[in-house]
Length: 479
Image 1: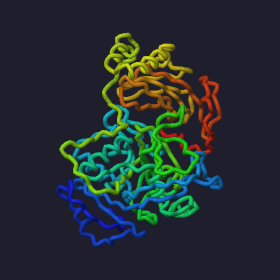
Image 2: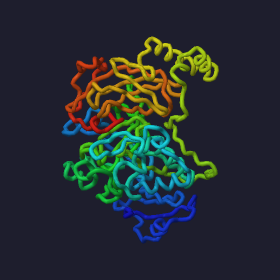
Image 3: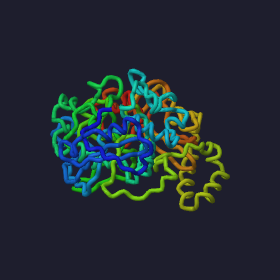
Image 4: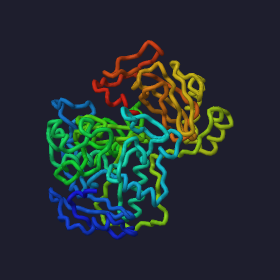
């Protein structure tokens, strides 16, 4: 892999036996500063080296002005202060780096553990199949390509392992940290300029990437020495997707969605599957944490603090957003008196009351139970780690809001329908009491309201009309 021009300093903690590529990297006589004068760092995790540059923090204008022709409604402009320094990885985590983590821990990604697989590339669009995983995304990759088809939990599991191996605190960046680092002091639409042609000089997009990712570090870096901060792969951030507060803030990190909205995590940077406007410094994206798409990856951040002693005997490999894949209760059990009594005594009064209310509400209608007709004629069929939405009368990209119970807990989300009669919905465990709450039809030009067949109920308030069909068509689990 062609390494960015940063100082390579191997930390002894967890080094193990270095690979030949790692040894040559340590011996390279690289300058002690990045192009922008930022301090550089390389952290050893097992046989892998992760390269970082130091970002000093500071205040910047987050979002985009209304005068930007690509301005989105969720890009409210405000002043944000990042009140701490941090080290950000110079490239996305590569397939080779992730393979090192898997080889040492035996970790299996969420796409590998379930029946549904991930959303890989079939040559024309992303489709979900069991054979699509981080190892086989549907296009050729080498170890220098960014890893893809990883969920939020898969990314967090990597950071837990890297923290334990290095003795440092390693995590995903917040949305504010990502944008501060991506801009590198610029106020233009992309850190390379205001024109889409300039964006293609710094990143890989639909217009110049071809069908798949490209090796990291090939395009121009920004002023901090960071590569692929625009294009190649979307990158997970720690924030829950929510509207910005309309005020100046310091170290923001959204932890709850807006009222009535599903729980989704922010992704930043754009991807090879999207046009350059999706990779603007202000552009935001979001996905359900369990999404596994062939253009979703991540990079990591080192907290700017001295290394702390860590017990490496037991390496955590599951993140806080990982869902227990153990099969959950059946629809019959979840609805029975015995099941309710068990939940009450095992979960405690505080946990049982909301679940009892949720189940009581479910009993108002038998529609939506696994394998039975659901609301508005849409059918569902349960699997071990999710369920299928069967809606041959809906156009691809139509929104379907559902509710169900997974491992005794209520789950609700909104998913776009895929091309074809069936759409798989990943839940992480066997769902019970599946119910379709509402359906809104979507066409290539955006929302056009309900369709005549099957009958549908509109979402209130109606969603923002997006003239760009990309967030829906050919891109499951992102909206």
